[in-house]
Length: 213
Image (cartoon, rainbow, N blue to C red; front, side, top):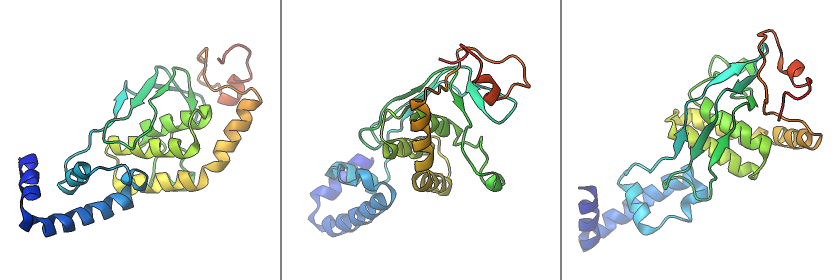
């Protein structure tokens, strides 16, 4: 029905002013929301956005399953992954986080816990982002766009998406540089063995020999 309506509008000379105005509003909305992909949109994609066609979303793989150290650090007890969809920004990588990766989930300042929990519905995206910030197989901007895109795939509230994305994008450089320096020192964040004593902290465990890979 939407496709037929679109074709009718394109065939009708009288519809062109309406269509032009509609596309103008759509372009403004897209530019505000996803400026990095605006230049790649073809005419048909603009029309689809104007007519509110749902995007083809990315695909997460496996549920998030974790264990925890005594302090608030977690480790994946099975791998997770995400694959971008046709409606996502171009050039995003598939992300596979291995079993044993250590994360603090969403790095939310404690004073904001009443508004944004470390384990909110954006946590899957946060773990993927944490892994990209550690491995640094992409640039930082791409890692941040993956975070935003996966949050949208999980239908996180738009205002929450914007708040988390902007917070990370504006203040995440120190974490990025710190992770790069830690990797150069030989630090690792994937467990070969899991702790069995619930009193064990991450700081204690990572000093043990042969427990990381």
